[in-house]
Length: 234
Image 1 (cartoon, rainbow, N blue to C red):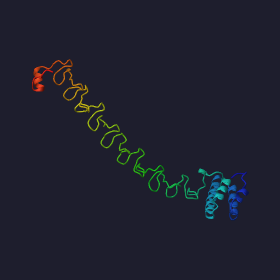
Image 2: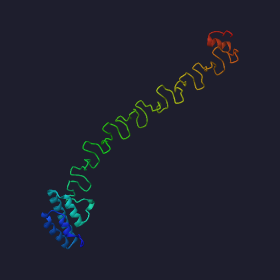
Image 3: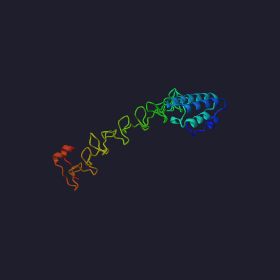
Image 4: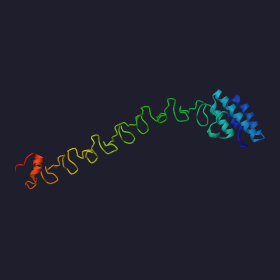
């Protein structure tokens, strides 16, 4: 409060039954010789004004009068000596139970244990799903974990970390153990007996021993070994 403060305007802003006491307080404040004395009087004025205003339901008028007299309060809100406003909240916005006006504690959790965005202290929402979209088993809605693998170790593309699918085939389409594709062919397109789709082996011989020129190429010994007898000419 300074020389330009209009005391009468301040007094007129509060209920009549408190105007005389308010005038005495303000006069004592103005006459105080030291800053310490003024702060002591100010604290008494604020405490008494808030208490009586809350009891008489004229809080808004009281806070307006205090602001006119002493300027804006620290933190923008007039509080009691214990640091709480007329609604019981401290300057940080928490009540005696440690909850804010929306019911959240200092850690950001409500009475039922969930945060403002709906997640509990364990990181899961009411449906049991984490912020990463995983359930308590570490799997997403499609049953894949954060690394992209299901509970059997296979990824979204059907392959495990070794690069093989559930049947043992690699990404190149060939079985890890047999070396054959699903058609029974090896990487050179020969089947388990060594013959390609056209019926010829690596030596350009068909299963009867004939070459692509229809001439018999297999020795009689090989013919007997493979067929049990000499092949009859075509």
